[in-house]
Length: 542
Image (cartoon, rainbow, N blue to C red; front, side, top):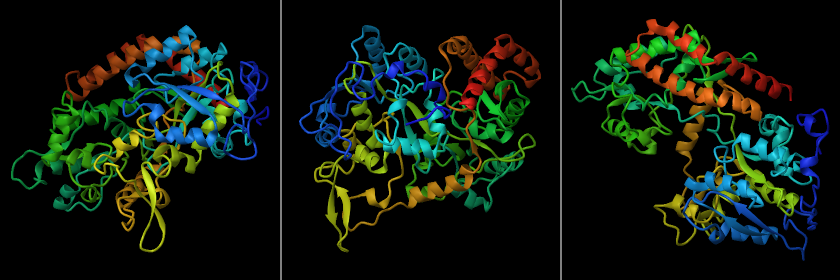
């Protein structure tokens, strides 16, 4: 159990939202098995739980073999309410408003089960406080993760000291990515004899100039586009970082919160991007083109530097060919003499919550805890033996996983989405890389091909891991704080987005910078920053 003085100190004096850790708010007293992991309830006991979750349309949840098998393992029967994901937020809000509640809210994510909803419904006792269940006895797997990384608890604890939802925790090799990275066209680098990637903004400018002028695609036409994006949405963070700006919004440095779009660093970023645009180094169609249009240019070998989750999504090349497209090397400048990039908090909230009609919160928490282990994570991702995969013996006499008979090998992800809920949702589990033990082969004597994944992992380790910084921690605002910033946040976002495009394309000259800053200040930015500083100080003190 937690003790007062730890990260959950403020919860120790108030357990009213979690009055019965064994039986749930309605007084049910189902007997829990504590002698082994499964079953969760003792033999002869009966427990049915209703889960409300977004449906992604691949299969009905009651027909999913993984959930059917898990019912057998746990002894807990399940029923499901799964409106289409597009309607889920509306349906969830209606459930709370009407009081027609599920026992468990699963896979909602923070866009549907928002932080303000957690705080509001938690304070009313409609959502059950979960912190007393995160113990070695009830949730050994999640408890172990929180001991390894105390920031997990800090990031899921609301201002009243309670935890009302469990997260998805990412620990795979690319989990540090803030978003998909940028990639260089490796063939162009080879054609130009480039052996070292740019490490500063000046060096990047020089390389982009060569991309434009030296015919790196070798077709004799001046059709090269040195740098492209769609509305700067993917490249912005990597290029701003060269000027010490990790996000276009609230950022914390040395425990001081600031609003980056009115900083001199951000102005320097705009000046650099305007220079690239004016000289034809940034795609003239960067504002207005679709992602499909960007990809068409990539497949026509017109792009030198671009963003995508993997480079072959844009170029149309194979994975093997893509290993010649190096990941963007973070840059320095006179504004940021040490390279830095934004890093992900590696955690997504709103994945699992329990309501006050749940007959056994303890059993529910034990039910979900398995998925916070590596074994349980792979179980929820791949399902039980004999459905999506099965064991086969290879020529060495080793047991390996192969795709089960009947699985469409051309649509393995679609097939997987039919057997498990861990498909396109923010699910409550730990996300880890697939090791050889869990790799699924087409034929038992095939070699596990991790070459591309290993290469991406190495690029990430070499270029990101040591310099990635979370721009602002994942934390909760109080209901009052959220009300203070909500309207301002929308107005700011719209204005900043419009003005960035105007500054970069030259529609608005940077000589009007002071006027821009004054406009932002008039929108209440001082009070806006103060709210986040208060929230950050509270988070820091936990």
